[in-house]
Image 1 (spheres, rainbow, N blue to C red):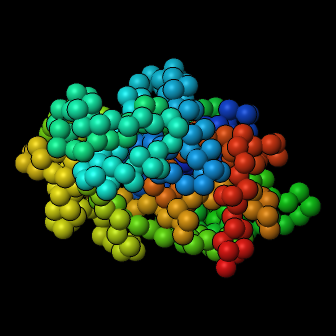
Image 2 (cartoon, one colour; image 1 turned 135 degrees about the horizontal axis):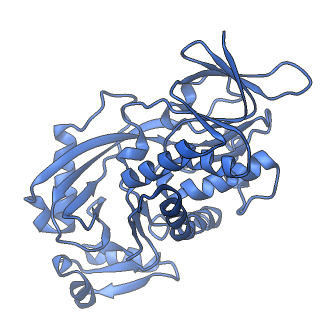
Length: 366
């Protein structure tokens, strides 16, 4: 059996794994990235919203999401400089559309301080296609990023990095390494193994399939179906009708998304899913009911019971660093998660409090 050595192994090559790989390598650590591409991965299927104002939760989660959103302008600038790929970043604001007076009251009551309420006339002036709405909350600091271009830029930076070795194989098991030096050994599907001082688990929905983890995490694959249509009817990312609409600025508009607990299905969208997406789009603006469909697809979100990620070194096995379970917010949280992974590996204080996202919180809840 062939063995390779590294300072850190990163399992998973979605946005979380790639971002963590680049951040770790930038500190001078030698990183092996295990880049096993799986059908249905969440990152290329995502819409890429950066919208902490929409999903209001507890203070710790909001702090995490806001800090993550505010990392993005500098992050895309860094990627552009190092990859030559300009990642489209929309900071034009996000709308939460109210279609009834009851929805308007609910949104207004829960509005964060950074949001402003648009009445019907103000909303119609901003987005004429939403004239049927009662009003909307406008989150002016939120927006979206294009995940497909983001992935291309991250792959370029990681692939060129002097401290990164990309291995196109899958991890099957991890185990503590024998000897006084400690660390971990990762077994690969192809029969090889890799020794390292740390392993970063960023396997998304497939994380529970990895043998030898220090604990079982309740991460469930939840299918989200998306579609794109030919339309320029909206300029702002808009939530409403039980989903969201994301204009890309290039003549495409994305409509999402379903939430289906179906395990690991055959990849791709379904007729029922597309029909649901049509209903969502039509509820946001009737024009989208008949806009020509360009493409439909699906991805598997790695969902935890509290919809929050698992980030940080494992209390039982500190050589294992978690960066998984990001649920609906993997793209939003990728740059900040990479910073937190670096802090966990280095043993330095994290930029935000990660205690609420610790891997042992599920055992405590049980």
